[in-house]
Image (tube, rainbow, N blue to C red; front, side, top):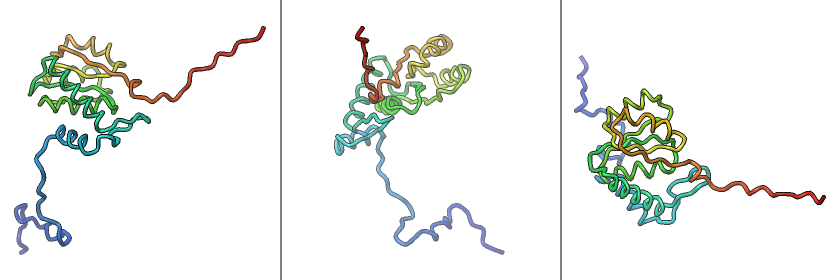
Length: 175
């Protein structure tokens, strides 16, 4: 009868290439600290690119710090839940890091959720504040009385799009 293997035996280790350690030592550090380190080391390097709009690590770190301060001014403290209802845009990244920076809980939500789903998510998470996009703001204002959300912050995709068009020229008829 073959010997029974269990997890403690770690049979997969025998398949590792020579020099690959059995266990990886890693630094215990929070994400906002990694961003701050990147901003110090690579301040002018591109951190984010959205539809041609570029943000450097310095700019992103500054956005995160300003947003974290705003959350604090709104009364959000360590352990409070903040709902984020944004598509994959630059403010979503800044909001996420800003929330983590003050020790709050980022409750990520899909912008395609129905109002019923969002109401459940907001209440289940005890979210006190919502970060969303202007296109959803009116829906969220209507939904707010059914939740514990006290403030709604919204942003616009248009704020982070490069100007790719020129004003139309006006031609006058010589008559």
